[in-house]
Length: 149
Length: 117
Image (cartoon, each protein chain N blue to C red):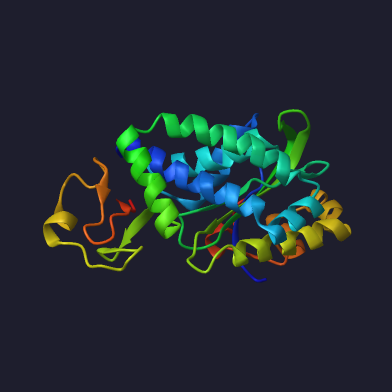
């Protein structure tokens, strides 16, 4: 699953909502689109925090506002209250709503579940760079994002 | 963007989220990740109810009818076409300076349409 991803290796936000917003900024959406996607992702988190491993959260949704996969990985050394537990790594993704159904979305979740259930989660938490994190997730870091530290 | 239109888009995304979490395969994968899709669906349905009440009754009823008929009640305009039925939209419609400032529907299929920024 070689998909391009964005990264932010030094998340400054100190709460869940602003951390998600900080990652959404990487995609350069227009303001309204960004707001609506933030609402969707935050709604999912309010229903159930998406902590998939100690220290790792995975905010995700499908939306009609995107026409391709949008994936970003973020890291915070201090940790972000999510809100009960602290999260150091965020894997955020938004997949498009296609007439064919949620098959692609399901495949991406399956891909991540498989990686995280093996030793991917620990590797990810100790990754030193966005390139290393992308490689652990078997994604490719966006060229425009390679200088992001 | 018109507030009702924003809420209709959010309602659509929320319905997609609920539907996904009720999908057998997605549920299975989410459970493998340690999540609880069934509990999330209960909460999301509550939130859906609250959001729907913020939409004008006319648009809310229309949304429900369109969603039950087509599956998707809100679609983007892509290359000047409704992406639900692929009908070319009238020029006057496309050139309007009020795009997204009011709730518009496709003249052919009736779905709510919005322009991507």
